[in-house]
Length: 63
Image 1 (cartoon, helix red, strand yellow):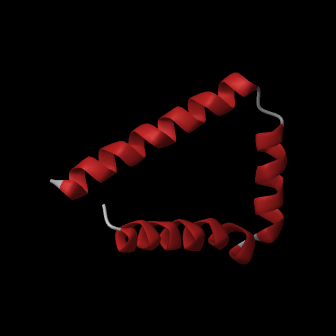
Image 2: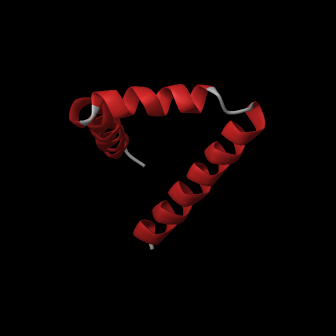
């Protein structure tokens, strides 16, 4: 992976992360409050799921 590829990936991540608070700030705030109520175990499961989906997508695009 080159630095350019990393920076493109980072840029896309920031764009997608910014969509929620830009398009629906009230709903985004509610979502963050709901996430704060989850247990550590639930957050870990969500994180592992996202990592797994990201890894699968990466492998699919790479092949």
